[in-house]
Length: 111
Length: 116
Image (tube, rainbow over all chains, first blue to last red; front, side, top):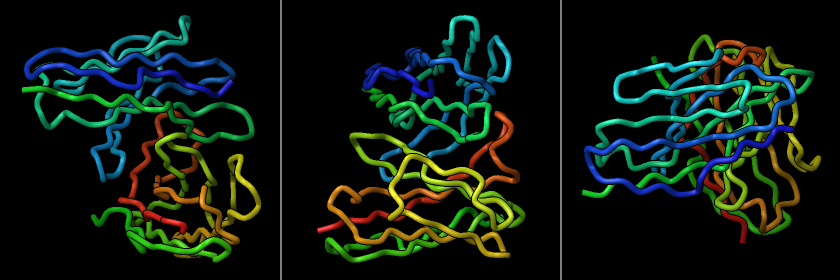
């Protein structure tokens, strides 16, 4: 149970709020991370949730519910530069403690 | 502090050849992980090295191998290249191995491999 599910695409307009969901299968769990990747760029770390609840970092917030095996990334006051792919990721427990990424959500911000 | 450096950035190979990619982690980071990124499969974990030892390996054939040197620099090698190996290969470094969910990975810009 290592897979993480995300919507493939989300579109929103500048100034809006968008939520990117991530559901995962539970087989040992060390929290949920989020990464952003612009076209042609490297993934960059955005946030991490070890426990249930909301973590806020400026315009970005991330939420985790371990009982529901669910998390989301909330982007507020969208800007054109937020157009990118967003990946949820988790480390699993056990012997193979690798960081597994979701398939990514392509966010397009329209003017 | 300098970021994660990957070389070469772009390369073209033909089927059957082999390729070696290099990654220099952030100074002080001792853990290096490698990922393959393709449009269809997303980011797939290849392997992780810490203190010159492979700690974890993803579900890739034995044609994919790697190593880490005493200065934490890492290389990965792909032998007998296939068309399906065309991908962006990303290296990420962190201070410690992936044993904590709070471990932040810093990625390099990647090496884009095209196999013809």
